[in-house]
Image (tube, rainbow, N blue to C red):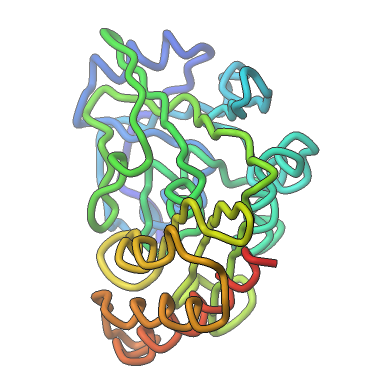
Length: 283
């Protein structure tokens, strides 16, 4: 298959990209890594007049640590994130979970900003951003805004990006010594999109859980927090029974049935993986 005709734009700066986005609004799509967009183009699932390639903007690719936060440029590649020492030191969950993303050639090309803007409910990064309490920095020609991960993602392939907006940076608070993390997912084959995945953060002091964030991916229309389980965990002492009861809440979430698995299978996997991820975070 070949994509429908479009005009290719290759800005060399963020300002130039924002000018193009402001000018063309709903008729333009942004190309970052292209690992999701290009297949959709080739199958003609989407059509537009202009393709804005931001790969030639060097200022959008970086990882730095400032004021107890990681700052990651939107076109930073998965593979760079996977092996970066700052990420490993201050956001170990992000480094570990990136290894589950597709295959090495995809991770070498795909970008964090592209994944988050695409908002695929089966992708790892939206769930990770929820658990890591990330902030998305979004620019347009007229304004700059910071959007918390909890507010950034909507339903199926939906985010808070509007026409003319460009996701330019992701900010992640440094992990604290009291925090533990877990990530588990299940796919039919290595590198396939996950049927179900679970990301967990637990903040534990004197064996008592003071904060918890749990996010599920692959179940239904969008990435989702497991708020009932979080509330059940906070303020309680860690033990096997508590983890077992918290994982039961995963059976209450909405799940889809498709050719890859039934809703019952996905709910079962959600419970099992939630328990395993919670145990990993406690350890």
